Length: 509
Image (tube, rainbow, N blue to C red; front, side, top):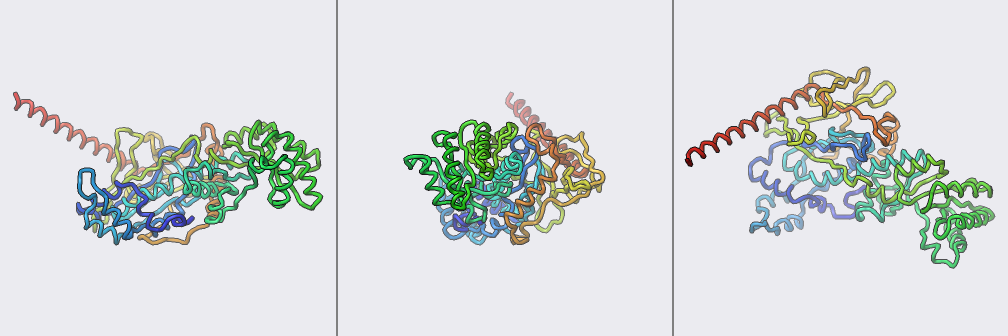
């Protein structure tokens, strides 16, 4: 995908939340703008109550960085913004600096199509704190939705058991750009084609489509409509047979199929878009076989998702392909991945050591993991992933294959006789693309391979098995120490405030 096919490159920088810019100016004016920082993108729970997520959107990160600039029109717009309390929102010195800004960041991320799990970094961003902050919203916008869609598509494709799945979601997607993102991410997740012609042009995804109910309704009879379409599209002829009555639609399709055979052509398939799909598919298959038309396929659509497809096959429905629209494009029943962008380490200019930082939060569930993290994935002799360990090099204890559970400090995971590999790869180094871009077909093949090697118990829909993600013991100790220190500091502040309040009360008496 090109981020700039629908916009000019400089629009990318303004595709942000205002608070990224207000913080950037505050960092700039406070003298902290040259501090270095590390931020992680991660999610806290697997989408769709599943056992994994499929990384997507990360392949576009380098292009995002390359195009992240503030041109004169953008700076002029920002110069005109008024603050709620009066006066200009941004100072001239900051806007002058912004006009020459380039995001000199280094970014590591999970490769597109690979599986990723809660709490571990999906993306790690390192650079001066202003650059890291300015790129936050655009980066989250890039990977959050596409990771969600790719995961949904992978689940649907799994349910389809090798039968083709086409993305039909453009008309129900969240705007034109949402439709493009759906098509792209669906293809990475395993969909074979899309109805979105623009996505086909931009990404090289195979496109698919035939006719709608309106085609049939525009003719005096269904048979005339089928004959006209077959004459126009003999090599792309799938007939929608449920406009009036499916059984009569099947009979008309049989008539047209015989006529096409006489011309040396073949009817590709019929599509069912309403009614009892399992029952109607069985009827259609029986009639085509009785008429010696075994090659005519049966396609199904109509608000499908992984659960309905699984149910259709459980009922013995002889369906050959699926068009999945609304529930794929909207990621029903979960419209957001919930990925977040959190500061994990910082250091002053000239310092070599990082100061780890974490969000403690009132809710333990929202506590973050400190330090400059990377992820080791352990695989057994058959290449099956058995668990991931989050590591921070300067606190690692060397306990290879041993990890403290990321949520439960009393649980220890051991990955004996397993080999480790890095999960995060460098996408951008010092503001420059670190490698040539991959094709979507490479990402799609990676997704297929990753899911093929993942334990089926983790891939199942109902109560999937938990995939172990843990902290290297040294990192677990660091995290516990920081929690204790933060609590002690908070208690000291509270005690001091209580003492001051009591003293004021005595003075008043």
